Length: 111
Image (tube, rainbow, N blue to C red; front, side, top):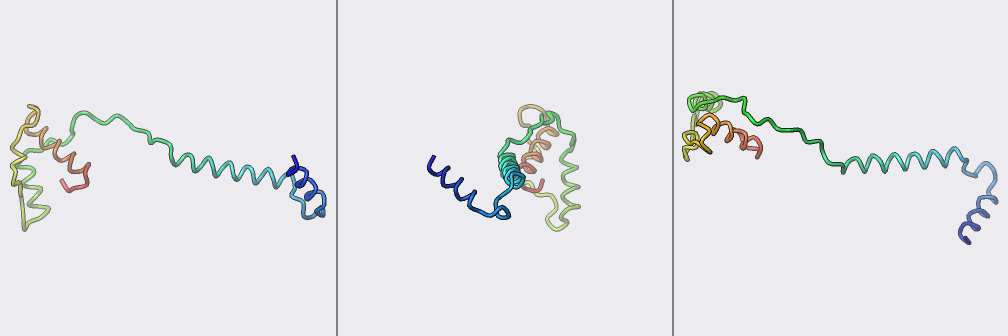
């Protein structure tokens, strides 16, 4: 209460041209509120949509070889682990290639 009394005393002793108007104080409060709301929105969780369960890429090993030759004619196709020949989870070779391409894209490597 003594701090409020001191503030009131300081405000009343200022000349009227130096006193903050009610309009200025409300604008300052609105500016602070807008800043707080904007900074809080930066930490809101992102909207996550449902990922498609099927792959639209239907590529075979021959398609990969053609793409690799076109993308890098010097090295061409290189698959030392023979991953393109594998059948992960019994879903077929095309599904395995699609899964490998998606995981490379997800983790930032060139598929």
